[in-house]
Image 1 (tube, rainbow, N blue to C red):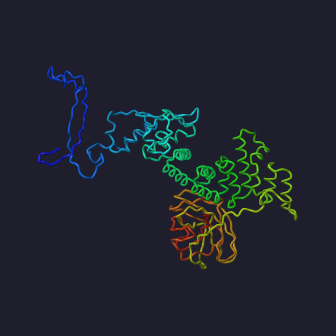
Image 2 (cartoon, one colour):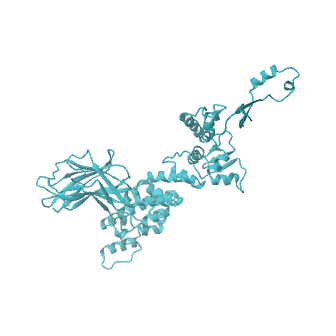
Image 3 (cartoon, rainbow, N blue to C red):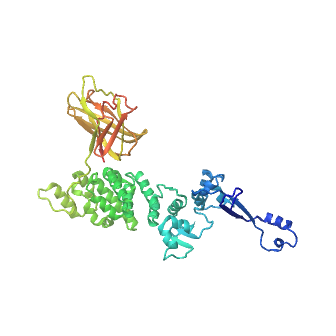
Length: 517
């Protein structure tokens, strides 16, 4: 096409179908006997819109900048409607509300409009029928591509998926259609399963990251079981870190009873498990009780021993204290009379019988110490306590587990101290304990332990506090450091407003943090 100045122009031609009202007016305005009036075809208006084109290609949103963009509220409204499968399109020209393909695809999420496949998701009695669009699904998943367009593709309008929960399938569809990841603690494992099954790797990675972030002693055992099933070695390693350091909390959690037999065996074999053996034994009995119920068996002593099988010999019963064995394992009924007798002889006899049980204690974890002072000192008028609080704030760059504090003792002979130690995060108490330690009058540090190690997340400041009761004069630290490197972990320190006894970064009490990493 040539313009008025003789320049070549490229044009876009839009064919617009006239509405019925315009058609009728056009018909009335036509002359009798004209071809348009005698033709049965509806009149069509052709309008030519000429656009100057450049070498650089433009997206639709750039060519038509005056198009009204959809607000975030409108998009969220459609998504919520679709999530509830209440997806009635209010506007016949809904496409014009959205400037990007992502927003338009979001409208189609869980929408019956133009759906060419349906999924019946969930087990019998709790199924949900969900619409889908083959092209969009095939673009988002290689499994869906093979299902709909591969060599062995079947032309099924309805596909049954009994092994995926409906909320998890919807979460996967929302990612494929909307490019949004919506996870919750209740659905993340099921969503991970769906993402793995349909090979949606970015969603699977997001699920694993979510699980790692929410990992704690309460869910570490069940997540260990799932991570092995899903073949996620990084998540498996993180689970072991939590289980090793907070073994007693993990073994006493409800999730421990839900693990499979193979995971139970791997935990009982664990050399670095940081727990008393009587706690391991009691946890195994709790798991056996739950397993009997899963198998619809009576929870009798014989059945508990039956479901434990050879795993019972992985419990290191001979390493228990004699009191723990006599008052616990020996009277549980799980052991045979011969086993109980042999273990008693193993405790007391000079010639010890051979046992099927492992008789070597677990190695557990070796605690590490972060010492924040370069020297210590004492003076005749320092360091006094009188019920005041010594406190310091710290942060780490990697997840660790604080087991306790190293504290200074008396500077004028031996003395006994009572220490109330505490760990807080943003004012919330995470761990506290009242313990005693004996100071021999030296400048050494003496440990005060929490009942259970406290999990510390990276890049967040925590407050360590202690209130000491004992000899008024003790050693105190000097030449404090704001940053200390301990192996692969970096600690940062800053003063705490909770400190009312003079402890700060440069000097004072709480010279050591004892931790597992």
